[in-house]
Length: 286
Picture 1 (cartoon, rainbow, N blue to C red):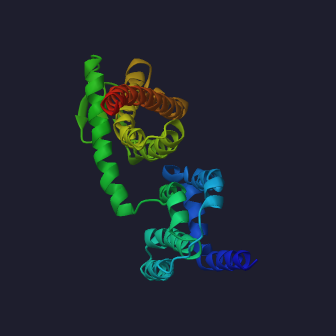
Picture 2 (cartoon, one colour; picture 1 turned 60 degrees about the vertical axis):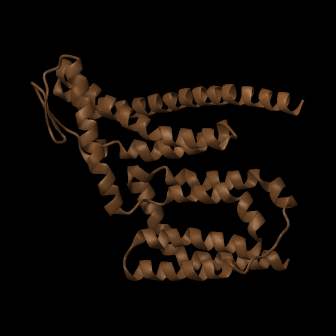
Picture 3 (spheres, rainbow, N blue to C red; picture 1 turned 30 degrees about the vertical axis):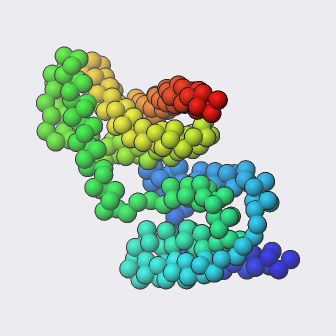
């Protein structure tokens, strides 16, 4: 009863402190396509926490005083973020409060069990604009170069200058929205979740998460090339409207298919490596 009252009190205090931060975060998810996946993160984290209910029921509850300074430090970070108008700090501080609460009330065994769901919540936080721009612009140039070289391989006359691709009948600009960072962020999230569900081995999960980066870059470059090819063969209108939107969905499906193939290959290779090692261990023990 006391524990329930404490949880309710902390939840109410958390809502009071962070209601404006949460409202702004929800607004960003609904208006910025780069982070629309944020709506899925909290339900997924809750599901993975519920999935661990058996382990949590068996785990000893050992309240840890270290959680208190984590909570206080996170609230101080929120104050700094509010005073400095830095949204990233205020949002990260929310996760610090949650982590500190679990540690303070339930203890380190609970933190270990809930480690993945808690870490998953990081994916719902938009990265700072200064870092976002440092990533997006190189990706624009990379997608432009990849697309132009692919078009040249297809014997399409093309001239590239920065993120501008000049074709005989039209000019394509690889804007920030076409840089691939949107698909990279979404595919990374999908890769982490899919890796967790598909394989229990940490090495396979990390490999899948890392594989999302080159897969997103390659598929986005192919999308740019496909758009340019369609504009050259059919008409400049093919680079806009429905085709442009549909190609984005098609490329993301193709990227996920590539991720599945990588998972199957990595799992198979891992099993092939592990089998001789286990056989050697059995022979050694015999």
